[in-house]
Amino acid sequence: MKVKIQKWGNSLAMRIPKAFADQSMISEDKYVNLTLVDKKIVVEPVEEKQYDLKELISGINKRNLHKEIDFGEPIGNEVW
Image (cartoon, rainbow, N blue to C red; front, side, top):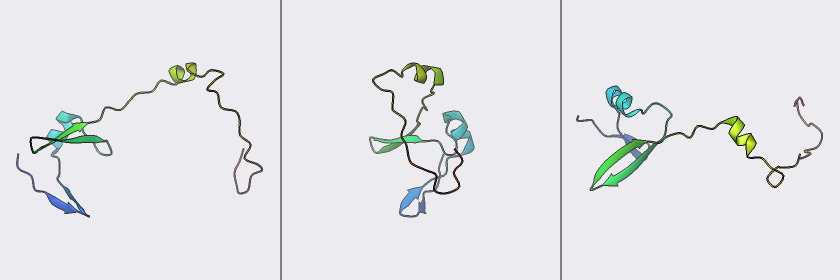
């Protein structure tokens, strides 16, 4: 498919057709990796790491537990 490269600020941009975006799992506000392979631009979606709260909490121990920090009295409209 032929698409037009256009100026976007100091960079260049191209539109990714919806069919291509859908099939490659690329959507708005997602990150992609750009690489050059033999003068060709390769665009690949970045897989987002899924975090599990229970798993993260299970990794807390006495050596990596942060102490509570006292930031002083409220200055503005904070509600604590």
